[in-house]
Image (cartoon, rainbow, N blue to C red):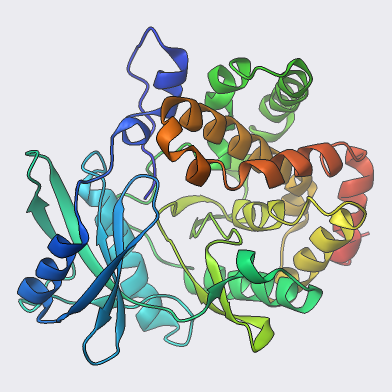
Length: 361
């Protein structure tokens, strides 16, 4: 689920930068309750297994007949309209491109695609059920060049399918939207390592000066905004293509190019071939959903801004919730490596390579 920006004044700048949903504990729902919810509201009996999640309560449901589902219980601090945004987006994709490897919405017995639930602590959550996508997370298998290209092509296909979709909550502000990188300054200033803090401060200064003014002039679209290696699954017997794209919780309407920047940021930590891997993905994406020159010109800085966002938010979150630090920091190490290896390459060299990948020399 996505984090709404909360700019309420606070004496703790890190708390203020993290926002309301980021500081709200997840719903207290156990597996027995999940089983009961499925039977009562969806007529499905089976067993439930908790899925690790930072802010929500999610469960893998295996029905007695073998079908798989995901039961999602939203964070009570998440506005209901934002949860509905995710539901309507998946319904749009089902109608626009039924073959896309994304979860499908399962309606309750009364026909609703989502409904509220009052928790034992008095807070209210929204309940949804999606089809389960079979496969192993890519992070457990590893990435080869063919899979990397298939991920990029699938993301481009998703971006094309979202063309024309809008929702009252599509423009909500979330910390994970790279265009909001300037709001991370308190988190960056709180970093303990002077070298890293200095690097990110310089990148943020450049972003605010040279990139931020350009973003409103670029193509705007609802995007997935989180194609990391945990959110893509594959069949280990066929490791060259993905079988599913998961977790639409960070969706937002933002410059289209940010979706690609986010995806390639998770492939910048290779010791010697990080730029080649990024260019390979950009080339594959461009072949399905052609990029504009102005988008490619800011792509390098958007990739680095995503790496910066990952480090800043996860460091702040882990400090506040040490009991969940292992999950929160799962992408922190790769992002740090990307900052060390990719972000230190000459900016002009990287942009020239990206241009060449799109035949825009």
